[in-house]
Image (cartoon, rainbow, N blue to C red; front, side, top):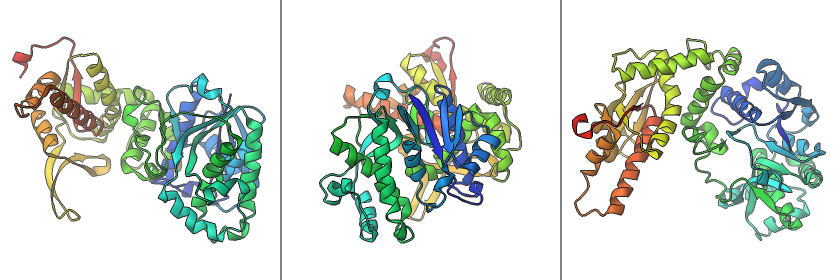
Length: 460
């Protein structure tokens, strides 16, 4: 199956100055770097773009596309808010089975043959709630044309759409029909483009229309995920700490693009795994990455990780230099995976709280009370804060000194009431495991695997 992506620069004078919905302009391009490179591990990927997109993605970033089609400049008469139009246009150009993958989607394994054999393929079916309904109420009165295929949605006879983070299938001819109706939906409302929220309009001429058309045709859609979430309730699609073992697919849709935490993980992952691409991007955004006073390559990254691990394993007093903090950030992506492996295989390991972390009170004006936080040093002399509860604080107190995981569990379960049954105890242990994993991902804890099973009696 042909794997494709599309990028339209929206006819902007300088696409590098546009955030495209992301936390910053640079994070949009970090996303393209990761998406293209992860796809290229498994497929020969073709890009559909315009001249400005070609200049950035190919000439400057040198992303590893197998083939590039510079065909989307003909969309430059569209309003820049109509971000789904390049996708619609790209579908119309396909003459063989295809799968289109958005630039904010990342994969860590091939899609299954069962999925790719589908006549139609989508990420998942979703429920359109009042969140979409309110958008439609604002848009619908202004429209001068709505296709017949939207009648069931207009009459409230269904409330579904398909998430099109991935979209395609073997019935490429039907996609030409869908693209024609979608384009007509947009084109016949040209006079009101400036009167409606064009950003929200995309949802209806793309996702909602596709659902209604496929429903009318009674065609089966192969979905990557069987779950049917609400349109505004996508959980876990930005969990970088769970790839590649627990998850092999992330999609930074909606508010994920604005999350400081998730964008920081995206940045760290690209620097760690694709340093040569990051260095090319840094030339375009020197101000955005001024906190890094070093260059990166695979050898340098390996040394940063190992220097961080060695210093903490030996309990060596260190300054919190940029090199140390970058090594810590790299390991925050790896420690959760190592933790999962050690737990699953009942291997011994030791945990400790990183010396740079501090627990402090902070007055929360919204709650009108003091809240306990873990304070962490970050690059560029910044700090971050993580709110903690009483159980978190007990865990971190136990981890003030290095301690074996099994001993930590024994110490924590000692806090339980005597009448707690076995199921209650197991639930509590699972809670502690989840908090440990969270703190490993959030750069609070250090993990060291042991070669042999130590004597628990003498280890405390």
